[in-house]
Length: 187
Image (cartoon, rainbow, N blue to C red; front, side):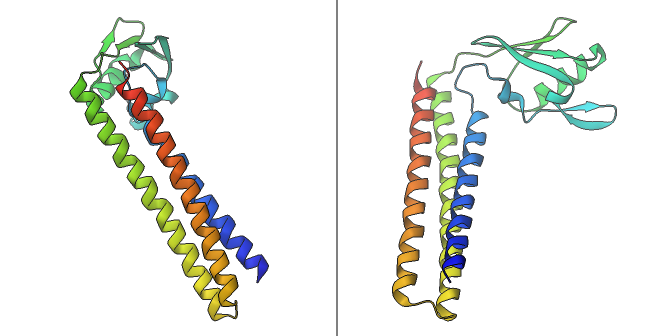
């Protein structure tokens, strides 16, 4: 019984950690007015007939805090990369100089900052829902163990441990969100 309880707790913890990891990854896509190569992770380029991640056809870097550079490995991919960035709905305006693509990250307006905060809050809520789902799954497993002979007191203790994990991970989501909000709203 002890071993099954440990497995349930570890599984719940892993699920909650993966929800936070996913949340952090989603937040990197929300730009706060600073150039970050991860902003272009969702861009796929038509490359020899296949949709290929931008990072596999070019070197993406930052020139300074407001400028991204994309240096393709083959000059023939400049146009498709430029088209892919425009079509990606990231609100970026690539400039092709014949050698590389340069993207100036515009200063964010107050309204756009508020939209980005709303977007970040929506991602945080998705993470919290994932964490609560992990809690529910773990609690269901505990109920199953209770039917197999786990005492009521032990089950209650395990459920409390699961709730502690949930609170800890939800607090982490709140802290990450607060830091991102501050980053977005900072002019």
